[in-house]
Image (cartoon, rainbow, N blue to C red):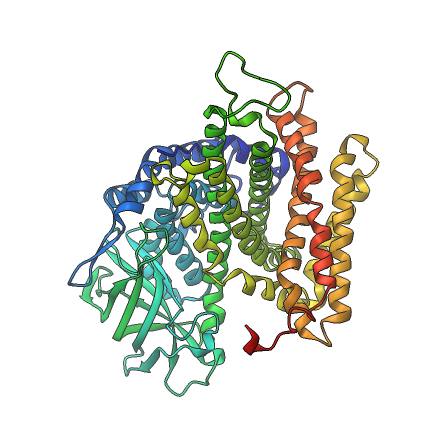
Length: 594
C-alpha cells in the first residue's frame, strides 16, 4: 500500500527563505498569512491528504465511478465523505475573495495545498480543482448578478464546476465546435450539442454542478471567432437562490480510460439546456482562457505531485529492498545483501526525480506569487510584469512538469523492478494517472507551439527579455562568489544556449515556420531547464545562508542542486543542437511514407 507525507517543511523553506513571502504583506490577504498561519494550514492540509485521501487512492482506481440508468453517477466509496470534509474545512475557497465567502488568502498557499491533494489522490483532487477554475472564470467575466448567484455556492463547495470545450470532432482545434446556442426572449439561451472528456461532468459530491460551456450562437462566425461562453447549471437556480427544476443536461456515458478512474470523465449531452451568456457574444474563448490557464497551471502541479508521491515510495523501497552488494564492497555485511540504495544507478534515478521535484515546486510557488501580484497589486507596472511572467511560464509549467513528471513515475516504477508492475504496490497506478497530464488542457506539443508561436513574440518579446534580464543580473551579482560557482557557472552556460536558440528562431523561423514547429518542444524543455536551474541557484543560495556546515536538510539541498547542475542541466546543449538542426529531416518524408 503506497504512502504519502506532504512536504510541508520544503514548502515552508521555499516560502520563507527563498521567496521571502513576508515581503508581499502590502498585497491584500498576505498580512493575514502569517508564518504561523501558513504552517498550520499546510500541516492541516497535509494531514487531510495523508489520512483521508491517500487511503482512497487505490479504492478510487479499483472501483471507478458508476453511471446509473437515470444518468446519475456515483463516485467511489469514501469520496463523498472526503469531499464533505474538504468543504467543511473551507479548502476550495482558500484564496477566493472574502466578499463571496472565500478566505482571501494568497494563491500561492492554495497552490501548495493543491499539490498535496493531487499527490495523495489525483482523481479526487480534480473535483475541487475544476471548481476553482470555474470560480476564476466567473470572477473575471461574469456579471455582478451571476457572481452573486453562483460564486458563494461554488466557493463553499455546495456546488461544483466544470469546463466543457471538447467535442468528438473538436479537440485542439476549437474552431470546429458545433454546440449551438439559440437566443430566447427572456435573455437566456438553449444549448444543444455533445461534449466529451468532461472531467467531473456528473457526480454525487455536490448538490449542483455548474458547467461552463463553449457554444456558437446561431448566426455567429465560423471558427474560434464565433464562440461564446455560457453558464449551464445541472439544476436551474430557483428565484430564492436554491435549487429549481432539472436542466436538460445529462451524462450520456463515462469514458473508459487508462487512469484517474476515481474521476468521472463524462460524455455530456445538452438537449436544449438553459444557459446564460458570460461576457460578450463571440468572445467565449477569451473568457474560457481564464479557466484554461488556471487548469494548465493545475495540471502542471499534477505532474509535480505524481512525481513527488512516486519518489517518496521508491525511496522507501530502495532503502528497504535487499539486492546484491555495493560495487565498492558490502555496506551492510550483517545482512545477506545490501539495499538497493547503495547502487549508483538506483541513486541516479532517485536523484533525478528529487532534483526535479524540489526545483519544480519552487517554480510553481514562484509563479503562484506572480499570480497573486497580477490579481492583487495596486501598481499597474507590477501587474503587467507579473502577467507577462504568467503568460511565459504557463506553457512551461504545463508541458515540462507533466512530461518530466510522467518520466519520473516511470523511473520510480523501475526502481521496484517487477514489483513495480504489480498493482498492490501502487506504482503502476501512478504511471497510469500521470500519463493524462501530458494530454489534457492542450497536449504538450500544443503548449510548446503556444510558447514559441505566441508567448515569445508577444509584446516584442517583453516577457522573455525580462526573464533574461533577471537571470543575467543574478549571475552577475553572484558570479564572483566561489561557493556559488558550482551553481551559477552552469546556469550561465545554459542561459547562453537558450539565448542562442532564441536567436536561431528569430533568424530561421520567420522564413520557414516549420523550423519553429520542429524545434518547439526542444525549446520548451530548454527554457524549462534554465528556469529550473535558476530555481536551484535561489534554493542553493538560501540553503548556504541557513547551513551550519553540518549534515542536515540544507546540506542535502546543496548536494541535490549540484546533481541537477552536473547531470541534468547539460541536456540544454542537446536541445540547442536539435533546434539548430531545423525542420529538413523532420519534414523530408511525404505524408504517404508514414
